[in-house]
Amino acid sequence: LENLNHLIDLNDYPVKTWNQIISLAQLIMKSPGTYKGACTGKIMGTLFYEPSTRTQMSFQSAMLRLGGGIIGFDNPETSSTSKGETLGDTTKTISGYSHLIVMRHYLEGAAKAAALTADCPIINAGDGGHLHPTQTLTDLLTLTEEKSRLSDLNIGICGDLKYGRTVHSLVRAISHYKANRFTFISTPELCMPDYIKAELIERGISFYEVPTLESALPQLDVLYMTRIQRERFDKSDEGKKEYEKQKKIFTLDTKKLKTGKEDLIVMHPLPRVDEIAIEVDDDPRAVYFKQANYGMYVRMALILTLLNHEHSELVTTDDSMAITNDFVSNAQCENLKCITRYEKNLKNRLVKTADGLVCNYCDYCS
Ligand code: NCD
Image (cartoon, rainbow, N blue to C red; front, side, top):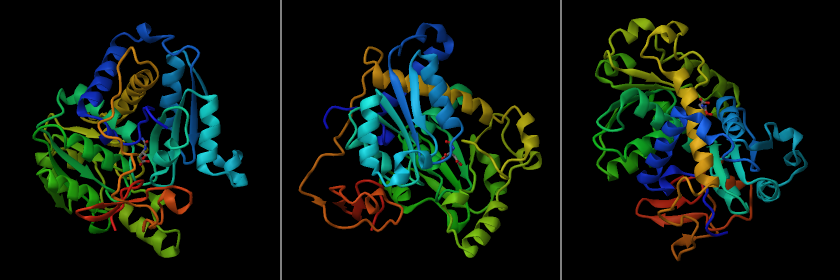
């Protein structure tokens, strides 16, 4: 399908487009009444194959505030997926009932695969441990509002950097603004994936990997905490043990926060488990609940952008679905959590790059 504007990966669009969405979200926050009814008669389908509170409900609230309607499921067991329907067929069908689809899936590359059969725009609301572009738009709006800038920031990212899709999307996005540097705070087991680090190295962006929160905290402008992603660990007893070990390693409390700068901000995509003590909520530097609220406005802006071209136009920089001679279509992606392992008819799976073969759906390098 051509000329459909999906949001699968923010990097499919130029930075100018991200800035337009953020500016529109700011306008909506200033005068929400102006946008009431801007999507009257439009229907948004929410297809959630994985648990969600903020992402799903902020999207739903956003659409209702714009005057549109919503349909969808948040438990695939009650949909025809449980009868063995493919993601492609479900998407094709629901796209006939909706003007826009928001999808969260446990497999990496699922939103991109779904976009191939959809007759309406698809928004990736999280695909396994891969990407979460609308959380990143939320984070960019939060930084704009709370730090007044998206550049020259020392950003510490702490916790599960391996499976945390929010931080993968965030790092790839914020590295496109000037003079930002990263401090990755994690255990070696849960460190940032190679494909993200390779991208940073290639583009000359500086980052450090450190094993403790204490050593990094005093220098930071932003501390982005994340939850250890229990659901992505191996289901075996060993996997459970590993999770129990990992979840206690990085915790932020008021004592540690005392060493932080006065204008530091503490972000977290939420939900939190053990990584931020409740006492931290009273510190004015803790902005994570505000961040969740910004998410609704940025999603209003995104819905308007995708559905209503008067407000702004999305222009893709490259056609990432295009078929070129570089594709090795019959090879199998080595990532066991890749959508191509389940939807057998997906084409153009691997692309040759200087670093080796990269999956066109989940970005896994083999
Ligand atoms: C995140 C997610 O689902 O990736 N939540 C969210 O969308 N705000 C973070 C998480 O679950 O840890």
